[in-house]
Image 1 (tube, rainbow, N blue to C red):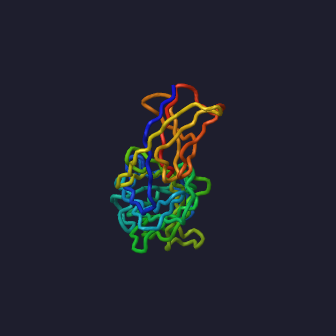
Image 2 (image 1 turned 90 degrees about the vertical axis):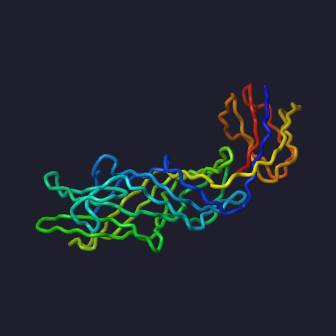
Image 3 (image 1 turned 135 degrees about the horizontal axis):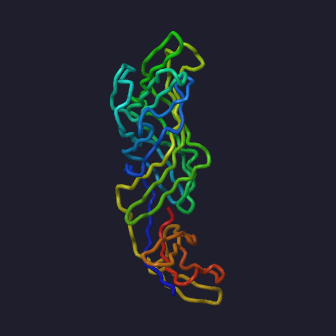
Length: 300
């Protein structure tokens, strides 16, 4: 059985604002060092938090870029030591870690607060709804108030203070992000793996006057405006070479044929369709097992 569903979506070139979905948008400190000493968990859940805010993206046919103006904002995940400025006590923070000179010494806590990132990238090729995420730049805005409140101890000395985060970090190589159409929304999924650094300016040994944290996880964001859904009729017929799928009218943008083997469907990408194409031929050797359902969607 062959069935075609009549739906084609087109996404015009425009700057879109995506609202970050806090549920699946979770970033963790997977490793870190404060004044040269490895950082560990301060308490249950202290190294993972969710994010909210917006991601601004410029989407055109076959490309996506990030012009800046995003507000990727960390939620507070608890009350962690030290207090603001490195003072004794607890205060709300995005993350909490701690270090120890030895298994027998008291821990020195560090708390990260007010984390907010912008996102920038030049145009990146979109292919089948995927794009390389290893050129994405996560940066702190010029007016950033992001800090690491820290404490440290070495033999016969101790200190505390606040280091301010600044600058830009590039996502780790090899990561692949996605842009998908789900219902009437565009859904952006970005894997994250980058590092941030703040100064520990009063530490006595110059080579270790910094606190560095590796941030890893995933951001998921959804477009706040609907996607236009003009109807395209799909008709099928068997020809000598296989199955021909005809489009009326022809899609005005590059598109994808997706297929599923059951209802409710689990759609998977099957064949690319060029803008203006009136039909495609699926060769006999490439026909999916029966039953098969087809639909046409825009190529993000």
